[in-house]
Amino acid sequence: MTSDDEFPALVWFSQGDALAHLSRLDATAHVDGQACVLRECRERLQQAGFSSFSYMALETIGRRILRAYAMREMGNVRFTTVYLKSRLYETDPRLAALRESGLPVTWNLDELEVRSNSAEPRVRSLLSTLRAHAMHSGLILGLPAPRADLRVAVTLSAEASDTSWIDDRVMGTVLAASLTIGRTVQPFVEECARMARVVTLSDEQAAVLERLVKGLSDHEIAAETASSAHRVSQHVKMLQKSFNVENRAQLAYLAARWGWSRS
Image (tube, rainbow, N blue to C red; front, side):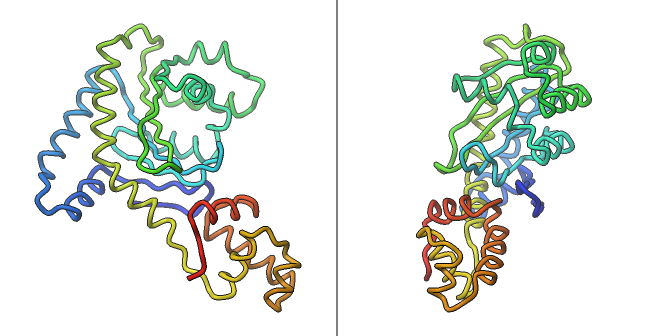
């Protein structure tokens, strides 16, 4: 498993990581058999016509992604990295359609270019990046998430220029394979998300965060902790980095959502 410290944080894992975690949870688990099942899932997806399969579990605040757990197998590392780091997801018409309907959405690049707001720079960047990686058509769907604060998105792409080949048979193959893969990696993703919530703070940082969650300003926090507003501000910036958020509001929201309390 590999991760970076940029925003949003991108954590790459393999199916081997997920299987090793299952083995640690249950020494009697038939890991070799599960590895075979996962390999068969990938083969069925490729036989159905898909060239890439992207599984991502996303920790979000609203529509803002804080951390993404992405599976390497059948994924396109370069595309996924650009997609997240350039925040192309914020204007992705495929995600918008998925949020609107809640159902699997088929897409092809030609239709996206006609129907999308091509005046938006990130939409143009998304379309050109898809084309550069030969992602001409595909399917996007959501899966059940292991935690209420996670969203799981599966995106499949193909070199075919239309979606007429994505019939009921192909859709059934995708759903079966995606659910099987999702069930296998879910315990590992859930553990990663749990560990990401383990934040070690100094007493001074804990005192600042405790009051920030209650809505106090820097000056009010400084008065209560016998510190200076400047020092409090520095602590807040460090806390934002520790919690992997961009601003004060996100920090307060996430700390409260995680049930953070001073031990």
